[in-house]
Image 1: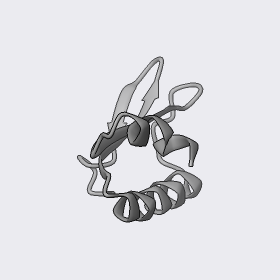
Image 2: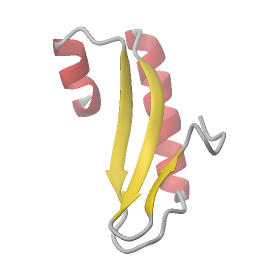
Image 3: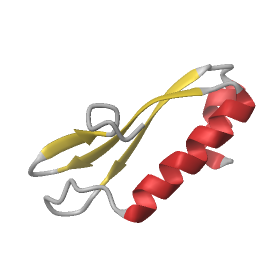
Image 4: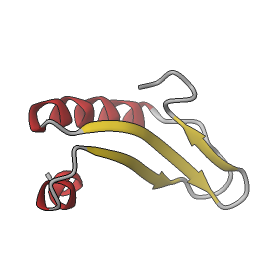
Length: 71
């Protein structure tokens, strides 16, 4: 619910999810994949498209779920 709070209050219909991994590991965990799937399902109910989910690290840049075919 917290993830969509700003989007719903601003009447947004698209969002990009972002979270960080400590260190340099960009590999999405099973938990990352599960929460992304659940958030996509919630977005469908709310009419909010998840455009991407980014994992960022200080050393290795980022990983895009969309680029990796995980969305």
